[in-house]
Amino acid sequence: MFEELTQKLESIFKKLRGQGKISESNIADSLREVRRVLLDADVNYKVVKQFIDDVQKRSAGQDVLTSITPGQLIVKIIFDELVTLMGSKQAELQYAQLPPTIIMVAGLQGSGKTTFCAKLAHYLVGKGRYPMLVAADVQRPAAIDQLEMLANDIHVPVVSMRGKSALEIAYESVAHARRGARDVLIIDTAGRMHLDEEMMREVEIIKERVQPHQILFVVDAMTGQDAVNTAKVFDDRLRFDGVVMTKLDGDTRGGAALSIRATVGKPIMFVSVGEKLDALEVFHPDRMASRILGMGDIVTLVEKAQEHYDEQKAQKLEEKLRKSEFTFEDFLDQLREVKKMGSLEQIIGMIPGLNKLPANTTVDDRALVRIEAIIQSMTPEERRKPNLLNGSRRRRIAIGSGTTVQEVNRMVKQFSEMQRMVRTISKGKIPKMLRGMGVPH
Picture: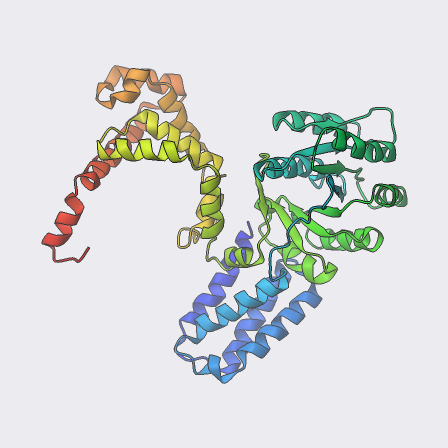
């Protein structure tokens, strides 16, 4: 996400860090470049002006000009101002004292609103909640079917009453939630291809009658300033509580994410970073600022890893590593754990240092798919004993996995090297080598 913006800002910061001494004039030059980059990213021009003014004021002091590392200090100032721009702190869902907590979801058609409802339900289940979905979008023919299908995938009940009005469905769903002991009710309302009075009036009436505890507005991050303008119109009528940005994984510019908080005055609460139902992240302004400035987001990466962490599995794996019994079966298991955390590009983008890939570099997730296919084409015995893999077996595996013998050979070689490294570490050879070289450990 935000690849273009990150690369351009990195280029400016590289010049700043390379200067031993910084003056007011080259600070001004750098900020002019930052202004241009933000405008190119489709950030609202008023937001850009205020942002640059704020950074300039903080950068003009003697502490910056006389600092040992002035370039890094300015980057820190820009980081702090980005955090402030996007809301300073995480905005959390507020739950009602008397269940169910009613959350109404609004937005334009095509923004990913219905999918977000299912993602939110999935997220809440992971937090120990008992959500129920409500299919109150009766305008789009496939909306009810889509929500029912998604709800089935995550085993969450859905209220759908074909033939009734959106207001009737939304109103009656509250009683359904109470009877079913559901503590969160998520109402999917109708979207349109564009703003119109009929749509706005429908969601206003639902708000008036159902009295939701929170209203979330869903916008497509890739629409840039159009997303901000739409949010303003909705907020004038609905007074929503928070914003959800979808398709953020495809947004290379970041204009909407940087503009919407300052323009509408409402926090971004969630961001959707993929098509899968678990590809939803709580929005943290400081973590997002860190990603934008190319510093990674190790905290979110650790949280993702913890979500899929199995202590018993980890202990068994550690035991196997110590005994040098790591097999292709274990390797396949670890690949699947990595895939649960998201795409390789997303994971790499969160790791400080690894996220600075050269321009136009793409990380191919299909490489993992090919490795998985190769291992699955092996017999159980071959997975446990890789030394059985002679030429004829490798040809059979290549045909079965839809790959080439060369790809199979390369993967087996890499696995053997990894096994050797694991054996070296488990036998304590590396510490001995370091001692022999006089390196403290």
